[in-house]
Image (cartoon, rainbow, N blue to C red; front, top):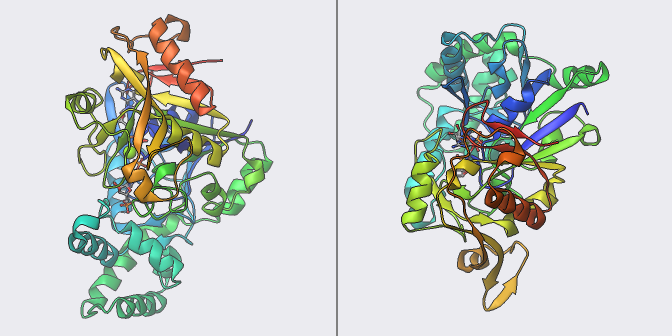
Length: 417
Ligand code: GDP
Ligand code: IMO
Ligand code: MG
């Protein structure tokens, strides 16, 4: 099996980076194919914490090759800053970091638009990361977004910026300043520009192992997420090829990452949300604060309706279950197995978001466990109640969990055969 994808199957922050880190040990190349600096991917190695935003988290290994596909949106300022911070911690990029210059640029203008739309939206705000992601993807779809390749030519860049500022009715008196700054950043990024589709397909041909790193989660997918409270890219399996130029029929394994409970950051429907002390307790125990924005994450019970839906649309071949340790010490655990919508019981994800907002979760209850499981490395050593909880989730979601994560550190991982 040489091509693997790791996809978040809830509302993001499922612990994808930890799973990517575990699998990257065996991979040759790690590829981001969508999203931008809205992502916050945390790896804890020997007690040291790294948070990746746009740079693939496989970079933590000294020799792996890392790629940003054409489907990502790149804020050159933030990318350079992230690279500088990682370099300062001893990580190298030379000869092993590749960017597809087809990727659209996130401009300062996009961040302004993102922020002002949120400020003006009142009750209907999305709670974005304010990193300019939505406006950048919108301009890409409108075919007016500058691409990274435009940074190589002053005239082309200037024309492109003029067009986009005009499109948004923005004053362009500081056009020269913005152009100069972008050209300087372009010089710094140019050495990494590469024909990503050709390289990935060549690597595949020579037997190298590829690992695709999803950002965000399936319930934030622009097509099948809880629209409009979603991000602006295809976070689901279909996005892998569209965002990298690597064909879909060559992907062997799709690993769906699920938290043992559910979190969401930002606005939008969340049927199993806990508004009580238990929600607060999970937040504290799981350190559920955004890796990019520091916002407290909303916490709730595992939603098997949503989980089964995302396993289906992604074609998940196996699962990773993370943050299982966080549930230690809770007497009774609940799993949502259906919703009550307008008096009817449903087992499928509603397409009407008003229905999801008003959905009453139908729960089954499970016995919890009190043991600290963070030191366990063999599945059989887990408490019976933990194994029963995992088994029940597997049956409900229709996915076998082959990786169980019981702590943030790289080594706090249980592998099941
Ligand atoms: P990602 O965006 O999906 O990569 O996830 P984030 O990095 O945003 O959030 C996951 C958080 O949980 C990070 O702080 C991780 O260090 C942490 N984490 C990952 N797996 C585990 C686990 O099994 N147990 C605990 N307690 N923390 C974990
Ligand atoms: P990772 O990769 C969790 C959420 C935002 C907001 C919505 C739209 O770390 O899992 P955007 O800035 O993308 O336009 O915001 O999506 N969001 C995330 N939530 N994890 C993420 O990334 C997210 N990236 C965006 O909070 O609700
Ligand atoms: Mg995250």
